[in-house]
Length: 130
Image: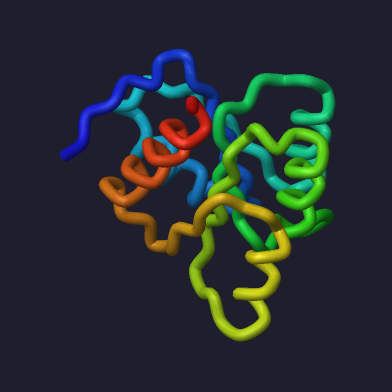
């Protein structure tokens, strides 16, 4: 198992289901990252637009108010330096195109495997630190 220390990192989880957030928070517990929850795309867009720190965003696709595709696109327009990883249960048909249009950096599938999650985030931190 990969050991990481992301003590000064803030990871935003955007998911309308609190249980999904709780699971991700538990999976990320040993990384020492600060994990914040947003229930929809609009809330996370506001948070980022207001200049708050975000080192990575784990973005669900299907949410009320504003979906993850739209939110990712908006965030990438004004802050391309934040890696966004789409977390989704299924990608079929048009969802592939939607994800491509979102300008996100990677995709991870639910149920999320902890090792895959840590590895995916670590890759993004490495990519964006260059």
